[in-house]
Image 1 (cartoon, rainbow, N blue to C red):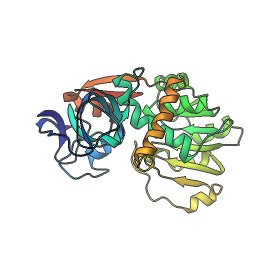
Image 2 (image 1 turned 60 degrees about the horizontal axis):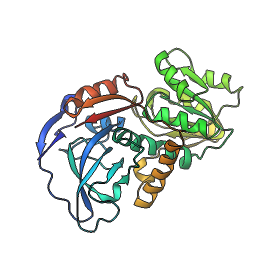
Image 3 (image 1 turned 90 degrees about the horizontal axis):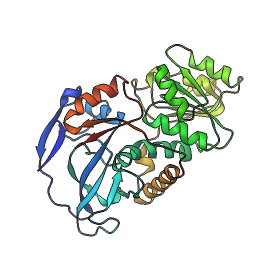
Image 4 (image 1 turned 30 degrees about the vertical axis):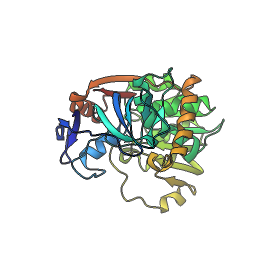
Length: 323
């Protein structure tokens, strides 16, 4: 038996119950993992609320780090005692779990469990956004919405290290300070300023090569007014609600723009792709280009408060649950 968070029907934070559940022994290709830290992400809210429906009952979460305590038949990439992390396997809100060994990457001694739990989903998201969806290069100008959020802070750091001019939007002065410290050259308080007009002013009318938008409804369609002709709009999240009734004609009107709605699960769909992405991320962390700051820690049993803080945008950077 182990402790786990269970959602029996979609709803608010109170829909998550703290329960005893059976774990079992690892089957072929699986390992038994004991969590030391569990990552928290906005997609967990989408699953809990039913915005992204999952079959019930389910355990939320897609990210964690811990120790391998048992391995099943055929497992060769990890062994008992290995420190590991993952970011693409649902069901992480628990003390122990079974997981496919192919989903795991080894943590080097220099990376803590908390960093490992907090870096995978957000860090790998930043990796595919910057290195694959729109591969940025030195001299590019990018706009990062929610620049003080978990993914946003990584995007600011990594993009600056790659030679980009980084413009970020945030909702408060405190968050503006965080985004600036993370590498944003310009920070826009979107509640006080028209961010599209400010982007035009900052860039001298040249606009941005790409907009990375994890906010959704509140920043659309104004984000399209921030992009140069033939630039790209990358919508990777819906923190304020989903973008509705997307009119493709807007892309031609705004300058033959490209638009995409990528997901980490597609980019990291094979063990080989996952390992290559994780290696790139860990190199960025090891070089000092990217620092993963864990700003909030909650006991697993206090997950409802964690979600309340996340949804009210009280959190910055990364939050973790500790079993």
